[in-house]
Length: 232
Image (cartoon, rainbow, N blue to C red):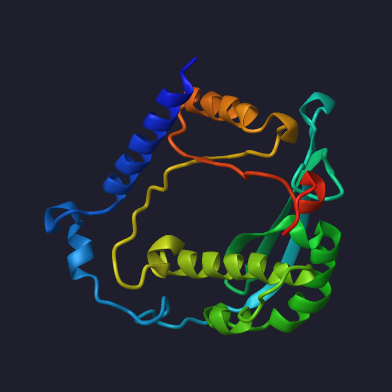
C-alpha cells in the first residue's frame, strides 16, 4: 500500500502528464487532419441536409439493485438517502431511413417521470421532424425534472446524424480542431465514507483506485451543511 505522500505526489505527476499528453506542443504533434480542417461556426456547417425524419421514439428504463453489503448513504444529501440501486434511461430514436440513434437521459429527473415526458410530450412533437434540425428541436432546457428527457433525445438525434454521415459524433462536434478520440477514464467516487473520520477514508479509497490503474480521481469533499452542522 502506498503512503499518502507518495499518492499525492504520484497523482500530481499523473495529472500533469495527462495534460501534456492531450495538448499538442508543436505542429508535429497534430494530425494532418488538424491543419487541413476548416473552422466551422456550427457542427452542421458544410454537412449536406438529408431526408431523414423521426418515425418513433422508444424509452427503456434500466435498473440494477446493489447487494446489501454494497449499499451506502449519501452523506452530502440532508435526508441521508440510501443508495440501493443504479438507474439509467435509454432513448432510441427511429427514422424513416431505418437508422436508429441511441442516447441516454440523466436519471435525476426521475426515471418514470422522464419516460412519461418523452413519450407523451417530446415524441408527438418530433415525429416527422428532420433529424438535422436537432439543435433547434432540443435547445433551451436549463433545469432538471422531466425536461432532462430532451438531453437523451438530443444525443440520439446526433447519433443518427453521425451514422448518416459515417462519422463519429465527437468528430462532428469539433468545429475548429481535430478531436482527441481517446478520453482518459477517471474514478468517480468520494461518496461512500463516514464524515466523522474524513479524510482518512477518502485517502484509503483513492489509494485503492490508484492500485487499479486510475491516474485521476473525482471526489466530493465535505457534506451538506444540514448534515455537518455547519452554516453557509
